[in-house]
Length: 335
Ligand code: WQD
Image (cartoon, rainbow, N blue to C red):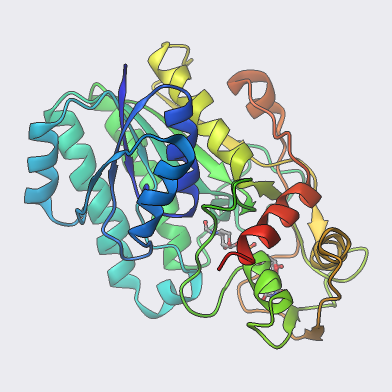
């Protein structure tokens, strides 16, 4: 049974991927420093899969701890989620983001190399494209200057990994997520935003739950059919499945190059208003919202060209926006 290290495995996408890995028969070890996750998620994962993944509270910035981990484990592959991911916060604290996201990545890569762990899946983001010149967005779309230190850590992180695959025995895949939403059907794991949610769907569900008074729609004057911005919302379960497919591609040596990149989206763009209307339909709740000014740094539209993911990776998103929103609402009601 292959053993997979999931860094950030108690986080939102990480925890859903751990469940998928265990259900696929992999042995899982989680590293998480709990800076953006709760330890209760570990038990929630176990209650879904009836297998407790090994858990190590390690900060990847702590080089000695990372060395110690790899010296005592035989890891076949790594899925690397652990990173700070709040766009606005990264503008206020750039050095903390570069130290955590890039310093942690370098420590991880150095220990993987030292201990001959040669397979890596990197959690990247469509944010590397900025406002793409053409839609839908393909993997060959130009990488635009990052709009935030967070986005820059994803761009530079990909470059660091690519450079390492050129000189070391490392095979890597970067997965560029569009907008992950939703929760596991059991409603035992889901998105746990700390403080006021920055992202649209958790703010919607908290508004519907009465935790927030009303949703502010950031901008109604975009050059889109209904004036609100368009994104590609992908169910976190589809996203988790893509990580299994990508990891098997590495283990089965199906890769066409030492470093590959795949966009993970549905290929369908939805506006903020469409998401609101879809949520109202599936939840039966009337959402309280108002139109306000655009949010600084937001782009008009982004949705994925899924051709490469479908034809080369062999993965396609299967779950609908409605299914994702209903799962997010069911999860919110457990909190
Ligand atoms: C979606 C749309 C907002 C909140 C970010 C990161 C990206 C990735 C996903 C990590 C936009 C609008 C939002 C609200 C709103 N994160 N909105 N009112 O900005 O597309 O992507 O999260 O990898 O890197 O940039 O996602 O959910 O914040 O916003 O109107 O209260 O909803 O303007 O149009 P975004 P989001």
